[in-house]
Length: 419
Image 1 (cartoon, rainbow, N blue to C red):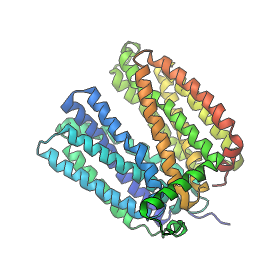
Image 2 (image 1 turned 90 degrees about the horizontal axis):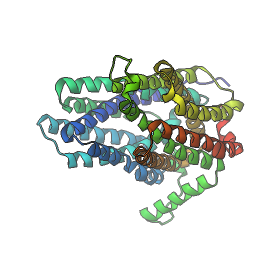
Image 3 (image 1 turned 180 degrees about the vertical axis):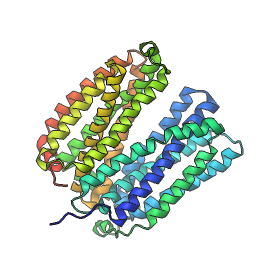
Image 4 (image 1 turned 120 degrees about the horizontal axis):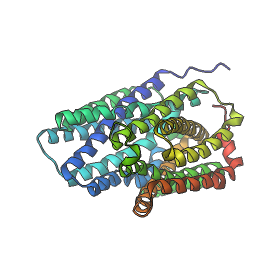
């Protein structure tokens, strides 16, 4: 059978819409962080601001899953983008008048985090339906390149803020980005059918039906050892990723190690870390071009998981040129991991249960991230950053063996698909 072309109308539209909204989100996320730091001058209030965005990610995805398996995910996606556009346009109007209120911005951050938690589940569950058969690998390689493209807009946001000393114009651009993305997404032609396979109401009220759907989603994951293993591993490994936040403090606290370089330690870190962004983009291109034999996907994923731990644990001990090379390779490996895992799980889970799986998965990953951030922050008060990073990545290697390798037969069934 001849493989279909990836770039159909619907796939092109969802990709364009994603790029536009990601660019806007990157611009505003960076700008609002600078705004909070400038007005408050408090690192604690800044960290509280970041946590307020992450907290809804614990609750909203798992609550949204049963709902999104019963309603049009497309409508949820473009309506949330319209809502985001309105929120950022209101912020633009307020900031242009010189207004600033930390409590209000904190509330907005909670609202935006809630929207993001629901949106991510809706998007992840809808996106596979727009991919032609046999094109999952290429589609998710394209998806993996969108974040690096958006991340490249961070210096633009910084330049605008430094030039105008105001975040208002950035929020105006963001409002326009979300509005444009929503207009694109409304034109998607795919007819959703997952609502047709949802269990009948059976005389149950809304809450009772939600509880039943929620339990069915959890029962499905519990009955799938491969999905259960993958979800457990990525929750635990997200705890380890909390150590990545210690890299910038290491550069700042050990500036003398980098005195030979003619830039500030923070600037040097920004330059080196951008090699990771470049690696992610390059990795996406490689995944798009290279088809991995299906029988080798699990073995490659296992190697990638272990290699990421080794590189992450040792990168800060290397001289700057080799450190940059390590970050580049980490970006390539991270995208390889993402593409294999995401394409495989989204193709494996039935459409009628996909939102519930994605909701549970995102909730577990967010839980791991928050626990990791808090734990690493506390440990950094007692021990040097490099020692913590090495210890955490040794633990990560143990997770690769204890969870993924020991559960290899079930995970192979999912990863080793011809996509």
